[in-house]
Image (cartoon, rainbow, N blue to C red; front, side, top):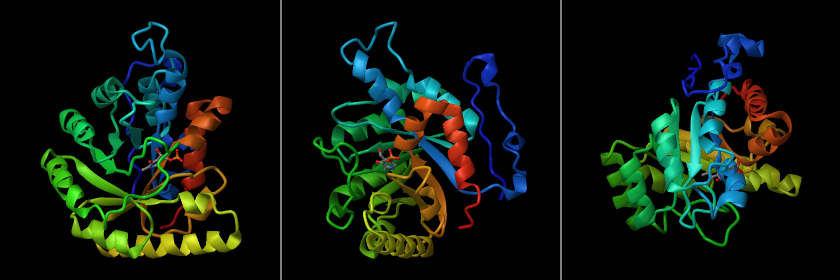
Length: 280
Ligand code: PXP
């Protein structure tokens, strides 16, 4: 399968002209079919650190829309943004502008709350990934409990799908969660890789890898697209290669962190290079 390169046509400095895949020195045929969605929340986190009380300031920066354009140009096939109830990073206006401007797909991460569901139905991202959301957490710390919340999830999933939005559920890698996701008729699951990424012993790492492998196989058998995300970085990406059936990785923190030192375009390209030998 050929990797489809969606290139942004957003107005960017001339130095940011679209690149050819061969620039990586990698032949098209050998390139991985594993796609990369870049979570750009932390670009907004940085802006909010200074401009939360002055959103209309002419000085408000960095702009997540510019970040999205650079990620696309570097080869990301999706832009991921989480609109949280407390608006700690992304704002509603950011999501609207992303929707208007990006050429790849927009994956909106969100909790299942009436206010945020209304935003999604108004903006109509390509995909929604439903996640659990607690105000006190630093990031999304566990998967959505699809088994326990089936009743509340079902109408939301139907409303989103009726609006033409593909729905993913962010779940811990257990067979119960995968089965429940399959029964709810979603198109995708995103396996929570946080426990693998943060494992502090080889035993936990091995166990978690086995859980992820089994969950990926089960989801694939149910014809669900299998994505993965959370805590993936330039080192533990090698472990992710052991999980079968993956279509897409959604990565934020480590790419934006690396971008501070090497620039966003290079950070995205380096992650894509680390993903390229994935053989499913
Ligand atoms: N996928 C989902 C569903 C998430 O909630 C997050 C964190 O916002 C990510 C991927 C990205 O995680 P990280 O920032 O650790 O790469």
